[in-house]
Image (cartoon, rainbow, N blue to C red; front, side, top):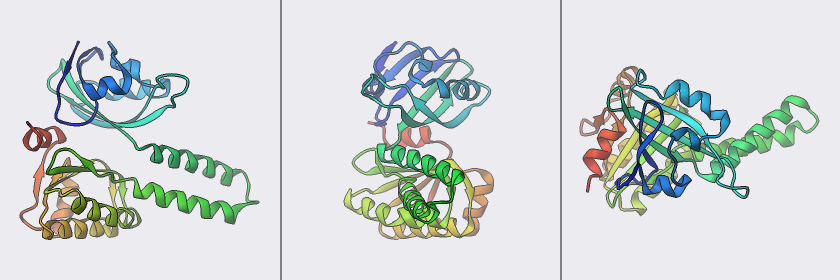
Length: 254
């Protein structure tokens, strides 16, 4: 097992089909120290999902996982996990640890929903809190991740709805200008359903970013999603790429 240098600023592992770690990035070491097996970093609740999903028969996969606490003072972290098999023996794994604010919001949502199911006594007050938490969750559903001096990634999570896209629109437009980014990678790997109003807001945002001078690359799109985007007539100069790994290799290689 060796540490490798990766330009992608996220925890990276290279594993075999038995989850033995052959290589890892500095970010992976900082996240959970040196481990011989990838399964050693996951909370028990995520083990069965990882074993069922991370296998050569499923060439590319994305899933949400929970990471073990490092010590008693640490808490369980939630992360999005991306897996790509190079062949039947080896796979590359990337982890995107979610913002602690998102974890807190998710925890708040769970608590509020449970209480609303159990009692109607404080319904109006709890409904207001829930709506506020959902709004905060929507704002965190499209993080702006700087990959290099001129490139940033925007991984989209869950269903594309009008409310969610309106919640992230302002911050993404401001972030792309504040950071001086020339290229934006919109990653659809973890996207669920397309709401027509939501995708209209998203494509309008992409058009705005394009006309403001940013190069737009769409990644991980499914065929039925690509048809819907094509019907909305995005600028011809917007590019499409098959996978996140392909985009990183092209635009972030040193």
